[in-house]
Image (tube, rainbow, N blue to C red):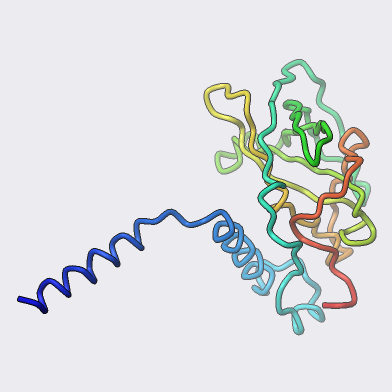
Length: 205
C-alpha cells in the first residue's frame, strides 16, 4: 500500500509540473530556438553558403520582459497605398494599417503598423501586419538597416496591441546581399535604444 501511495504522489507531482504554463523566458527561448533552427536549415536559411558552414546560433540581446509592451492601437482606415523603399529597385505596396502608441523606458513612442497589399490576399497571411523600425542601436549593437517585428491584426477591434521587441529580427539583407529588404520609413525611427531581439550579425559569428 505504501508503494501505491508513493506512486500516486509521484504521478500527481508530475501532473502538476506538466500543467504549469511555460514562463515568458521559456516562450522567448523557444522562439529563438525556432529561429536558429530555420537559419541552420540550408533550404530555409538566408545565410550565404559560406556562412552556413560555420553557423551555430544567432546573437540575441538578453531577454527582457520590459520590451514586451502593450500599445494603444488606433486604426487608420483611409490611408493611401504607397510604395515602400527597399534595398533594391523593388517597391512593394503597403498601407499604414494603424498607429501603435506605447511607453518604453519612461518615454512615449509611436510606430506605424503596415499591411502588405499582396500578402493580404493570401489566406496564410491575411491577418499579418508588419512593423519595420530603427532605433539608437542601429549600426553598433544591431543591424544598421533596422529590424522588423511581425504582429497580427487585433481581433474584435481591440485597442491594445502587444509588441514584443524580444521577437524582433533582422532583415535577410543583414546576412546576404542577394535579398531585397524594406527600409523602415522615417516615421518609425525610435529615439531610444531597443536592447532586445536579434543583435547585429558581424565578424564575431
